[in-house]
Image (cartoon, rainbow, N blue to C red; front, side, top):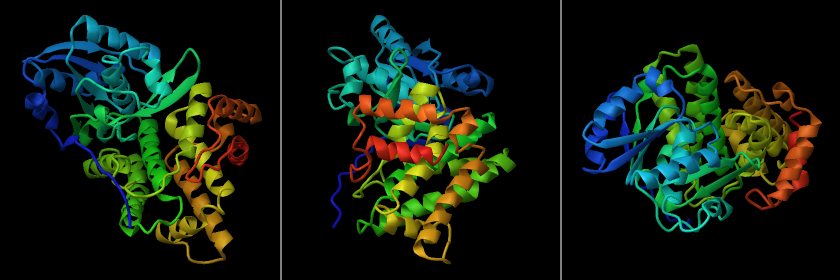
Length: 385
């Protein structure tokens, strides 16, 4: 029997025109800090729609949150929260903006050094400002979960944290707002969502047929719809299906009661921190190698994945597993995301640096069995040179 505790309070507003619906969801009289990244929200109309929806509120703006949001930047936002007596936050952008806003929400009310939030993985958060989000880039699922990742640029550290107090109160998902995204970001988003599912699905059997089938359905949807986002960039239905898949991939539902891996993400975080690769690019590099070096521990689920997701039925077990991993790599490449370190101008010296960082950050017992040592991580990366 599965044992689980599922909790997700985020209200989702899905569809075209839903930005206007946030007006009654932001408390009357609230002083709002609107956080965003670059200027894309001003070019695609999102900025104007948000400002119109909040016309009855006092709104202060904070721009410039980076991809892989920087601790240093976010602390400037915390200063504004204090100076302007902000009591509600609104993240407008992709996963990085939402991740950053979660940190600001917690850090603004944290007693002590806010870096400790990241050092402790969020376990020490006791209060956070309420916030909502308007999503413009489907990928991370941050719009409907309580997790975040923040980078400290000064020390090249990328740290995750999570806490129930940093669930968004609401999130707007309007797929029409993704039409202006560069295709690179679209491809990245599909890969990111795909790997989120894999981290929760491809471990070992746990008598969880509902979770397995749900995960497989998301993978099949991404395989079917993902390439269409590149070949049919103006297809609203395709964008909607990909956006919802990315949200469902990491809102907690498919991970209920099942073992989870996340080694690929932890290794990928070090690649991003050291070499500034996009998050999805690191996942595409790491996952095929991880699946290969850990095929014995993952054998049963790899065979299930090969059969149910890629419909591979011929050959012995090892050949079916190898074929499934190769199909995975090919799918990432089809989405325009390179799966080799060499594709990003990196060589074996990058592996040395990543392994050293994993050891320094004590990330040497990763995976669902805590058996992914630094050397296992090295072996996985060497398969993707």
